[in-house]
Image: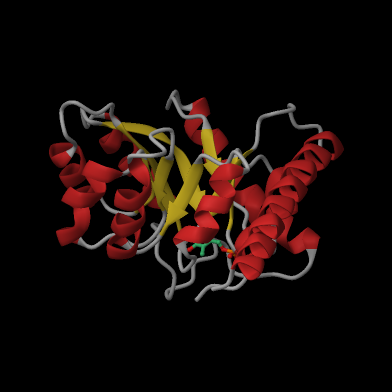
Length: 238
Ligand SMILES: *Cc1c(COP(=O)(O)O)cnc(C)c1O
């Protein structure tokens, strides 16, 4: 990659980050959300280290990755120079990957079964703070999608709360794609209602991870506290 191309795409990424911060503020205002209540997670799966570096230079700290091997290369390359970075695992979790996830990530958004949660808790190194977790809810009821049924969320939440090296933070969802804002909002509202019902039952949670490039506005309208944006920041994946 020549220098001109690189600096060009680096400044584009920085402009995109500024744009998303402006949009977050705009929708926080528009939908009566508290200012500063929505965080931007930069989803860097399939994106180069150069692009991640450009985002870091623009002040981005939290990055989301789906594939463990790819993520570990990035984390190892960047960690020494940028100890402030916060890595979030957002992909499906295979049993044999839990140890590395427990060792290298600050958050896991995609907990969908009790065994995976138990392994992450057992394997979380003692010198690190508890691993922050969200339970992934399959809100649209699609058999092709990961996540657990809304009806099973409460039991899993109560189970995860007991695990000593995990900190249950909330729910995550990837609804079926809708193009229209009202339909997007309807599904996100169901996720929020589930989240709210757990809080009303005394479960201590504060995080609703929902909304991506195509539907983040609807997610903010319905209470998202973390939006996960990939292509909108970095462009198409490799
Ligand atoms: C890839 C991915 C994203 C980002 O999607 P974009 O459409 O690129 O913003 C967010 N969340 C999860 C779980 C993903 O796998």
